[in-house]
Image (tube, rainbow, N blue to C red; front, side):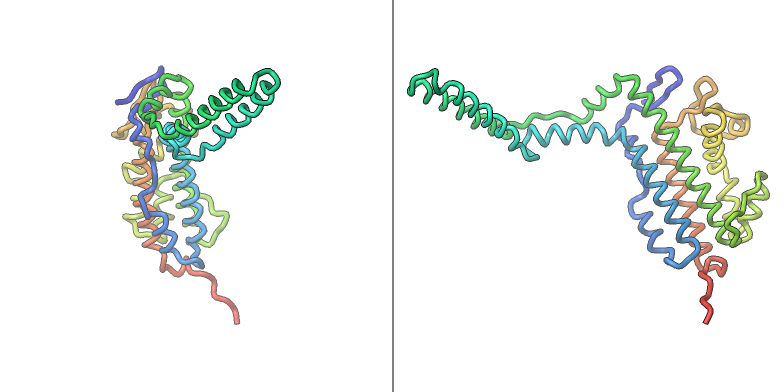
Length: 287
C-alpha cells in the first residue's frame, strides 16, 4: 500500500519498481524499421531514451538486490574471498617475526599452529550460509526519509522523461514525413492532430495525441515540467488515476509502467502505419 511522507507519496511494495519495457519490444522495433528508413533515427533515439528511463526508475528495486548480492557473495562463498585469508596470512607472518626472539621454540611452534588454525577457520567462513532477505534491506531503506524523497522525485522525473521521449518521437516522425527538419508543432490540439493525420489515418492521429489516456499522461507531464506538479484545470476535468495531495500530482512506480505500455502501443502502431510510405523512404541516388 502507498505510504505518504508529507506531500511525498510512494509505494512501499518493492515489486512495483520492476519497471521495464515489454520483453522483446525494443528489439522487435529495431528489426522492423530498415536502416535506411527515415523513421530509423527517430525510433533508435526513442529506444535509447526509454531504456535510460527504465534504468533510472528501477533503481529502488536494484539497490537492495545489489546489496544482498554483494553480501551473499562475500559471506556465502559466491564471490572470490581469497583476500580474507591473505590478510590473515600477512598478520601471521608479522606476529611470527615479532615473537621469534621472545619465545622458546616450543612456544613459538604452538603459536604458529594456532595461527594456522585461524587461517583454516577463515576459509571455513565461506561455508557458512548467512541469509540477508532483500525485503529486510528494503524496509531499512524505507526508514530513511531522504531515500523516500529520492524515490518520489525519481518516479516523477522518469515519468516526465518517458512522455517527453514519446513527444519527441511524434515530432521526429512528423519532421521526417514533411521532410522539414525545423518543423515546429502548433499549440492547438486540432492542428497537431491534423498534421499527424497527413501521414497517419485520422483515428491513429487522434489516438496519438488526444485520446483520453494520452491526454492524461501529457497533462501530467506538463504539470511536472511547468507548474511543479500542481494539478491544473485541464487535468482536473479528466478522470484519472493519479493521487493528488495538496493539489500536487503524485506519480507512483505503477504509473511509469502504465505509461511505458501506452507508449509501446502507440509507437508500434505508428511504425506499422508509416514504414512503407514514400515520405519515409530514403532519397534515390542519382546516377
